[in-house]
Length: 409
Picture 1 (cartoon, rainbow, N blue to C red):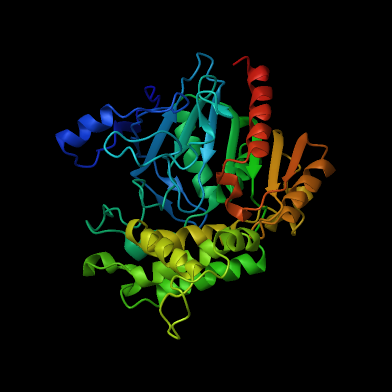
Picture 2 (cartoon, rainbow, N blue to C red):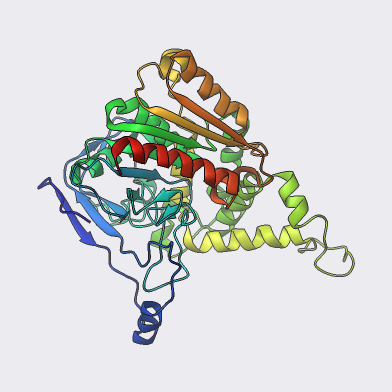
């Protein structure tokens, strides 16, 4: 990480998890693929200046977790910001020395020779405010009380995250990103960058996303939140003081979400109606393989994710609607954008359907904005943006080649 430019911003390596000497030695000797960014170290950046929030309040003395890959060139023109989705974080690529199994969530996209080539681009991943992966959020101590924020942590929005990300860019001395890229909720952030800071990005890459949630999507989020809020261990969001977690609610929330991330075709191919045993057992225990899979995903999620964070992030999804202040007219909302756009969707993604991407493309074309659109026939549903589809990756590789030529990277 380069030195930060502002005296109000401090940066330090994040404390690694405790690890034995044997484990550390094993990790150091771990053979990594040639196209991996390798062992990475997150940085904690502290911002003293209050950040005004969309809800009218502000947040001061907050931390953001940041990871970087590649080298920032002398002109600071080759930086790419990767925005994360609901349950992801700043850990975009590479592995941690203390846990080589913890591979970055978009590691197949980012690295030497990969579509987003870190031999040519300087890539930044930032964990958003309100998250549970090191940035200031509900689990953090409130300086005013000395206790975790819990339910008192302010409701944040996509726009608040983008303003915080802009301060990270300022700290690196980056006046303009070569690209801002994201999938799903990350795509909303990329779009918001093009609207809020039109001069600060050359390209906006929106993958498997939408300019606003449908009523059905808001409904799914509400059911998931209700599962958490109704868990007896939730305690009004202040469960930290009780030494418990609302795991039952989190399990159900994750199960609901996971169903929406997969297509019917993908679920049929993976599980069909396959039973765990040889025959039905006339019980309400797990009998089908798909039930076992969902419970496994729910249990795993409930162990590492924070319930208050889940509430915050799903509400940020709900609130995002850049056309709202333009009477619902998306064409007017994107009229002042200056970036070139790449918009990509997947045919079986019913959570953020291709029709929503086409709505954004039409609004951009109505304003004569430069936009490329790809609708990829893939069977994997919404999760396709995270997977190794050669057509999808070739699209991204070609687009980043174009960006590299523009900036001489």
